[in-house]
Length: 199
Image 1 (tube, one colour):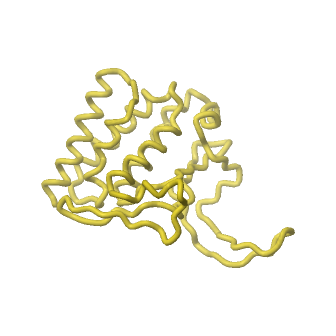
Image 2 (cartoon, rainbow, N blue to C red):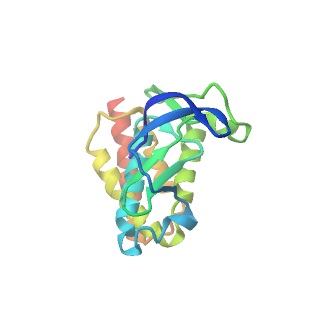
């Protein structure tokens, strides 16, 4: 679900030369999703599948130690396909045994500067941006998808540096059903415990 750059080079356009990137997968009908544009394409009946894809990728991106800044997700207008793009300003988490640091890009946009102060700041910023992509009417589905993905993650102890931060998902205001919230909190706590034991 993450866009991969397979080539780069100069491209001549009607307004002058630009740097071009060849990305994979290609979503010709892809549009950046948001709370306003995400729902309804595809149909609401498939919203659970859309949330599953969005949350699974978010959990896996964070698990790899990447805390995206300015999160952008393309969704094909005619299908369930999604591709996360533009990790130019992502914070990279480094460290082990509870001693984490953040690697910032060479150029930092001033409005995002606070995201690079600590690993926690980067993770909270990333999770908040993902949360803001979820319409209020889909938060129950998103919380269920997160709980399922975190339960799977907790069963795999040798994971990425970001695993210890997966409890961030349970701290967001999902306002979901109490049973789902309890399940989400338990799964997130288990993920953090697994990382601590394996560190």
